[in-house]
Length: 65
Image 1 (cartoon, rainbow, N blue to C red):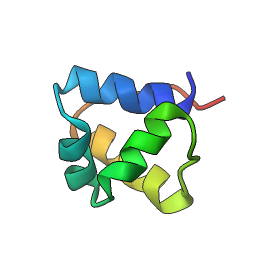
Image 2: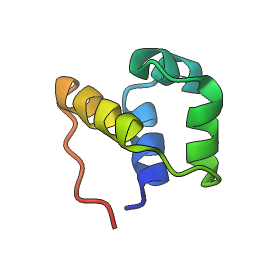
Image 3: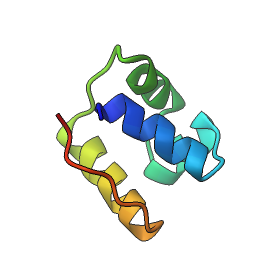
């Protein structure tokens, strides 16, 4: 599963808007939008924030390709 698909999956699983996920991660909503469209690769900090967020929500995702 690509990272963009993980973001979409987690958002839908938690019934969150892009804005709500962006707020939870402390990033700009445009960042989430670009990641989901596949036009932006997340940096190390965003990856770490996302992984920590998933862990706190009890969502386990496989390794990225």
